[in-house]
Amino acid sequence: MNASAPSPVRLNAFPVFLRVTDRAVVIAGGGDMALAKARLLSQSEARLIIVAEEPEPQLAEWAAANGVELVRAPWDDGFLAGAVLAFAATGDAAQDAAIAAAARKAGIPVNAVDRPELCDFYTPALVNRAPVAVAIGTEGAGPVLSQMIRAAIDRMLPPHLGRLATLAARWRDTVNARVPAGTTRRLFWKSFFTGETARAVEAGDDAGAEEVAARLVESRGREDGHVALVGAGPGAEDLVTLRAHRLLMEADVIVHDALVPEAVIALGRRDAERIAAGKRKGCQTRTQEEINALLVTLAREGKRVVRLKSGDPLVFGRAGEEMAALRDAGVSFEIVPGVTAALAAAADFELPLTLRGVSSSLVLTTGHDLKSRALPDWAKLAISGATVAVYMGRTNAAEVASLLAEAGLSPDTAVAVVENASLPSRRRLHGTLADLPALQDRTSLAGPVMTIIGDAVAGADFTASEPLRARVAADSPA
Image (tube, rainbow, N blue to C red; front, top):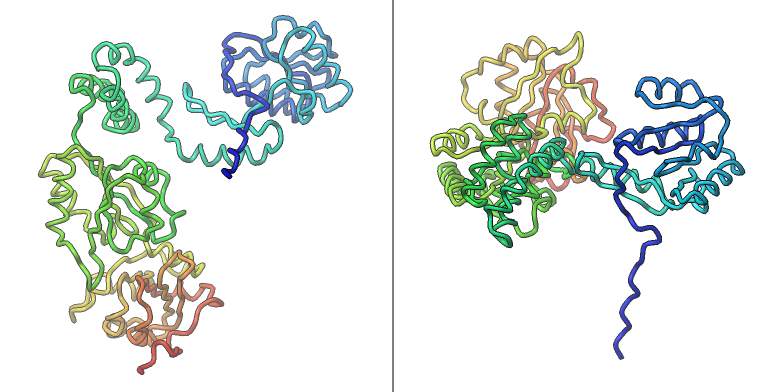
């Protein structure tokens, strides 16, 4: 016997958008509740009228600063005349009930603040990208939940979305006349809202956006591809920037490095093509030249490409070579910064990379740069107090320690090491420059390793780390 289908979930309150331009909305009350509703309604073009015999100073100041009519008088049902909405926010149960009854008798929808049994409607948590608006409601059951959802949606929607929607409204009639309905028109609007037009609006180039929109109409939505060189951050998916997340959701193809965790890649569209570019120590699957050619080819096919790089693309990410290849090919691209590993490792240790009176500069380098016996120019900065952050320095930790010691850096200089910075699986070790060669023996450190050296490191929290010279069973020879 088949199980019966679940009953449909039905709303007790149906969401609508009510026109309020130049129409009166009356708010009864003189305290915090009235002020909260007034602030919410001030995001619209309604004509607000606040009625309060003795308004609190903060409400009075806000009304004066925002040009809102404040009537200092006892409540009278006559204030409802001509109103399109009413709010009872006096804080007095009997008075709110009387105002609600009067509004209902006059045929005016009413909201009694924190009294859902008296409400004809509920005020939503609002995400405002005028003319785009997203309203979230829980039928009065969970205002805090509404605010949490609002915050999540607010982070997802780019600040320029309202200006882009306004531009779309201006072009709507032209598009309807010149771009065939159906799939072609849907693809046109998808390109409009996510492609070059959107990027021009985001950059504040309104004239350029108009030109791009005109070209897009001529091509009926077909446009050139675009590449975004995106920093995936140090590993934790919640350290990815909002812009990076948005571009991942819009990408047709995600070309990712091996160090980028699956959780970050999964932030992209489910139907996006994924291409592993390798580039991990010991298992490089594509040369840099092949990656450059791949990005150009995908863009010329009209694809929106995200080149997803661990950390920040401009810090040891070889973005310079990719940018040069894209420029030479005439392919448009953008850079989206990411949290680089040095910052995440410092946060894991709660250590300041710069510290007043101790370290006023920061050096970012790789262990590979220290493999030759030639001392790099920045070594003198380390000796004078700079903090040194060494990327990928486990296998040549001895050379790093030796060169810095020969240059005059004290063997007692503090050192902090993090494997898998920012992730729950991170492993932290600490010691001094004299202890650093022991890092090479830590063969169990299979993830990316970040080493931070300098006097400022001494202020770190070492309670969750282990000494560099402590050998664990997994690191010991069999």
